[in-house]
Image (cartoon, rainbow, N blue to C red):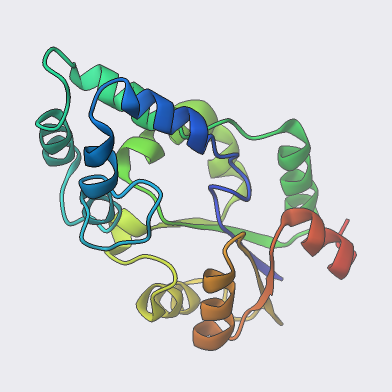
Length: 200
């Protein structure tokens, strides 16, 4: 069985309030919304360009720094940005390990950027490389969920002989896109997946 997991909001807990507060300390509120697009799904923002690989890390940092209060350092920007990550619970890792040990093929499919992903690897590289067959990241794929292109690209590159592919994502728009564009069966959480499919 293929199981494709969203990362942030499903495996990695989000700390939106903490990230917003950290950003407020280094830049004016209006730039958080209009430049970074924080808290919106707008596609005309720096955050969207970064998540879709339209700008690299240094370009992103340069443009954010231009919006920050004088004296703000690159490391402060990186630290504020990574405040979004609130860690992965031991329970979640245990669930992933059980699914992996039962022979299911696990994949990650994430709307993310290079700064967030490097932070993730610094914390969890060994577990990710051990438990997941492949990782599909928006900034590398140049597209984001819920775009049709992202789902079709992933569907073509995962284990083709699985009887069915299951998809776990906390965003309804992404689940609907997965059903429509890839024909996957979807769930809103890991717990819902496990309880419904009786996989553990």
